[in-house]
Length: 144
Image (cartoon, rainbow, N blue to C red):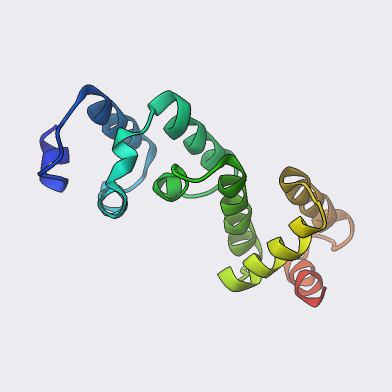
């Protein structure tokens, strides 16, 4: 409780806010990063833990994203949260810039490619078509 008050001294500490803080602080590697994220979007502490924060955290962890990003996606729609995670995946796994990942998603998702199918397809193509070479797959992604 004291820690939350130090971060956000003007916030009225309710049971939900304290529960959300406790949950989030157990999910991240760096409390300092979490503090900075919460300062940028303090509204996250007032969201429903079971309906909004936990499902978004599960999505991040399932997709291999940084748990601190829950602050970035908690207020997004489910579709936008999934796109955020896909973008993180392409940036992380194939060293795409944010701009390149945005371009790829705009191009592919416009063609009705399902978000979950896109990552599954890439994970399938990497070993079978590109022999495990992320560099070759990245070249093919950027080429088209």
